[in-house]
Picture 1 (cartoon, rainbow, N blue to C red):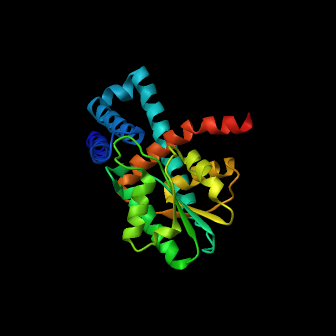
Picture 2 (spheres, one colour):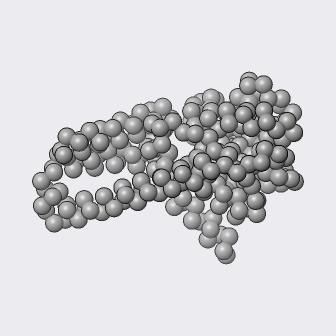
Picture 3 (cartoon, rainbow, N blue to C red):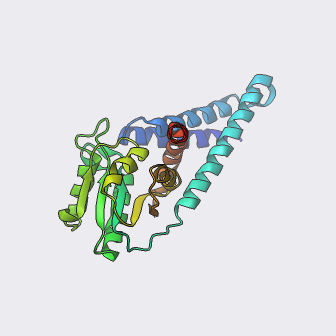
Length: 241
């Protein structure tokens, strides 16, 4: 059991550190690294965690937290893959994600490839690429998305840039003034559930299409999404005020 716990901890830590180096050390990466360290400590002090009262309590708390995170991750990913687009919407809103300098990250590229696929089935839709410029990014996410779509053969006269948003709520808030017809948004499967809520808070009834996430990125992405969902409470409170 010690060896198994150590290997689990090593995998979590390596996954979080790898994506911290590739992108940056965000909430998701930090949570996954912390989980890995706890598993390693558990394996190193296995008997103490089994016998000592306070450590035994902490172990139980950790197991509860991990179980909740796994169940939450399964729910949001399972829900997220249930696309409901009719492929005749007038507008498709592509939600931004991180850049590597000026290049879309792997997660964002998957969203853009799904956008290209959608546009091949809907010749009349206008694309709104939504995302501002974040830390470590040399251009706005919207501009990077436009560049990518144009390189994939999408005419730039079909693309509208929204370059100010810094959150999922703002993606919809700042895109809303342009929308005057049916809407579908495209984002990663783990991000769909929260995006639906943020769209509804902005009075937008939108269909959704999910982009898949590489399996190695799912732990980091789901951990980040859990933290973001907690941070989004401020928008629910604001809407009730």
